Image (cartoon, rainbow, N blue to C red):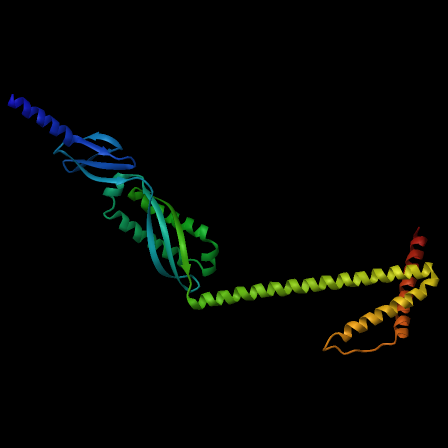
Length: 280
């Protein structure tokens, strides 16, 4: 009876020793007598006790490495401080264990060196404007090396590019000057457009009045009244300003000047009509 119990206990111990449970998202490596034997997938697996040994179990899920701030000199000799995050995952657990001694340490060193190298090949302006292209260049260069380690670099995100205080202040002044320049240009264009519209409005008014005088000669008295009314209104507006200098002009002379202008407009309009009739 006792031998049977011993055999049962031995079988139970063997079963417990040989059964290995691998969690979802993980994989494990088994060596037999010191040499690589096979890979264990998620779920219940069995090995030979005392002969087989699990030497590594690691996740195949996405992981990240935080690259500490690095001092880098750009192509145009400006010191910047850059930090980034690298996202990666194991695609071949066998290579990740046997091809490199310290996988995470190697990834940190490689990512740091590559980041510094790529930024040093670009100017500060290119670094700020072409981040997507620069990220892709770093990613491609990293994956060329990490493929031999059984690792895939999924993406690299540049978190911050910190400029020296002097450079930052200079860029702020430059941006402020550019904004002021655009505002002045816009204001000048607005004034130009207003002046053109005012001139067009004045010309239209003169043409309308000239046409009315030609068709109704008796309306000249109405014109003199309107000119006198505008003269009085303008004088009142000038007198309201503390810094204004009031200049008195003879309304009669102003009317004569305005009539000469109308006469020229009438003559020009008549010539235009005669030309059109002659053409017809």
